Length: 199
Image (tube, rainbow, N blue to C red):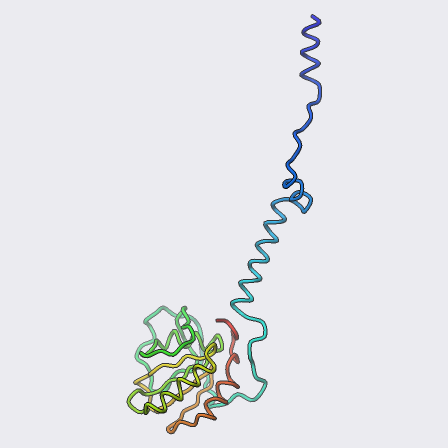
């Protein structure tokens, strides 16, 4: 009988909880894994936003240069559905879901992808490969290099002018290459678009 009482008392006696490890106590003092995980996610999202849309990207307040070109729609469409390329480099409109990266391209690029890059604030410098000299091409490459983060340079055989330079809904055509005008166009018009600075 006494043994049974002792066993019951032992079963009903409160037991001490095991002590948490020091690192776990530290985490709990900051709100636990849920709070720390949420904060970590927010910091990573902010970093990705800053990398994708950097603070302090260059944007002019001057009047846009070139001829204004309006488009009825600028929505995304399925790749390969734009049809034949027009004789003037497009400065907006319907485009594909994937933008092009900045760069100097040796071969023609897809209008649909380049237009998406224009929406992100790029300037697209195109030239008719049969109507430019080596010296003129060197000049274009220098300009594209100087504004490397914001430009796409590519040949475009459909062009009806030797040089056509576009930003979002603005177009500049040149029969003779005017380097200063082209540089001013890039400097003034880059990142003047619906989604500026995304790279």
